[in-house]
Image (tube, rainbow, N blue to C red):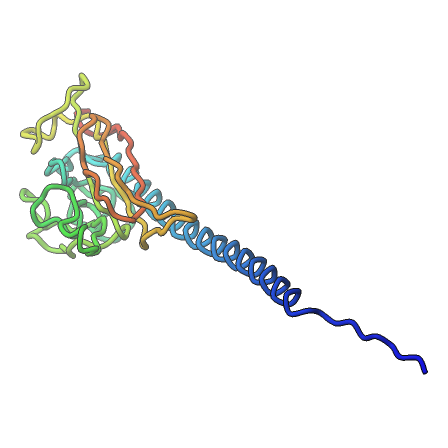
Length: 251
């Protein structure tokens, strides 16, 4: 009588197969985890870049119009020019909202102030970076910002966020010869160009891809002045700087 021999796997073979499978699965999970972290990091960085650059464009367009005074009698000008704050006026609208100059700066968005929303000590830096307290690029409008306005101080609405998570804001003012003016500028009519620098922060910490991430960067303006020292945290940041030529000041 014939019998068939049934060969199976030995215990050692099973253990080896299980070990190989575990290694392969661990590698697959690790690669997947890295991809997920990379995708999330890119999303956070994209959001930071888009928000900060959009805010910068808004500031450039509005600052460029500072002192716009078609009628010649609105007293539109730069009102306050400090390293951490800029206040200016322009005459671009009338009481009917017809986008026509009417000889005053009393209409909505005709007096504008930029400053950080969490900068009580007026140094141009988020007061509570270490505690991850949110600080935004703030924009305030209303004729009440103008100390010489005939509008009765009406219409001030407080600082409203233009861009979230901005850790530093800095203004440098240059005269017609390119010389840097001391801040606060004693005579804003001397200003011909404004260097605008801001440091935006990602909304989430970055753990890095393969290794942990530590931000030890020093952020400087165009004059090489430090506007934000190293924070040694895990937030990624973006420095944006540009120079705005004033079309309507000193003309």
